[in-house]
Length: 243
Image 1: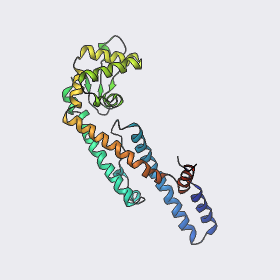
Image 2: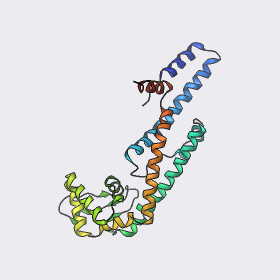
Image 3: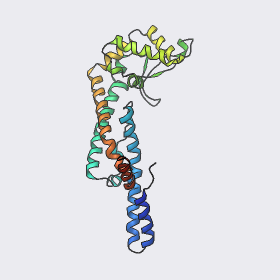
Image 4: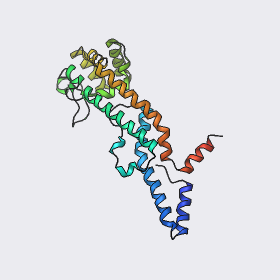
């Protein structure tokens, strides 16, 4: 967590010494600075994570869920950009639902015995019933696998299947490898079905919205960083950058 900088500490000291009419003004300014920092820290941390690691599930913070009084703590310029970010996140979540959740694109293409749509039990998964396999297996979170292996970049079902198989070998995790082998043996078209959905109009729209949010998060990161860092922190970082 970012600590109060020197300027805020000096203000607190002066506010304590001044007393009288100035004390409420100093206290109000310090409290506003604290609120702004506390407000922006979770938003900044989330956007920073998306900018660095990509958006792999619908967990983006939404500016429009904050109270109206909290939104007054920021400048109109930042408010406009966070408003746009909220709209982009809403569009992404809509496409995510159309692709992965009940009656979504994957739900309509993949075999019912293979795919469990998202719901109260977590995100959508490729599942294997342990009773169907003597060796221990695990369910695979489908959105995470698509993001981690960048399956949307594959130009053919064969390339997508090869990438999944290679990953299963490299990870050296028996339950995961067993699941991939089971799916290859018992659901021959599962990788082709994934490729088909990702290349569909809904799939391409999801990928496009995903990339848009990630790129905008990269743009917002330095702007929000200024709202989290104290004035002294910003000065110190500028000075250190000169040497």
